[in-house]
Image (cartoon, rainbow, N blue to C red):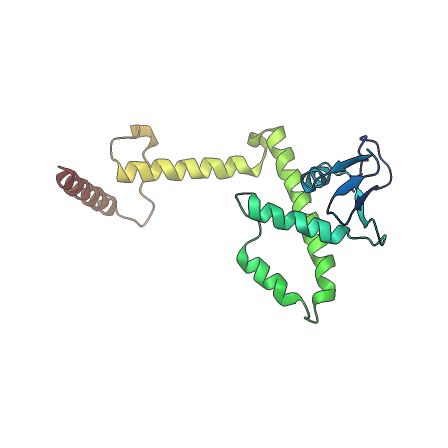
Length: 191
């Protein structure tokens, strides 16, 4: 469970942010006006807050968080929410499954965060102690094999892969000849 922090960095209750009619946001903990960017930073730092309409006292945290997401999507350069996801999400409004979506999305995000932490820990411990090392070694072996097939003579003799069982060496030789012929044609076109 993520422990929340107040603006001072200590564990505690949610900070109250008041939103005034002039669209200004007031942080009651720091007694200062803040921006949506400040609220986004607070979210990233796990600072718990609640946004209240200053006139009515209504909780408008959901609206403000949605506005932050819209601003991030519009101004962030790289969008995180694919159009297909947005279409599917909009399609769920009014659907009989709408009531289940909030808990499903929360569980999915929690699962993503848990896996993200595990991957980060694996990298911190060193990639050699993880399954990523085997994947990396396999990828490198495939790249060396492909380089040897498509660029003969580039690899060391000991690095050359053996022909797989059931695949004749002359097929590889034919591929090499075809690649050489294609390279020759490309060289001639470039002159």
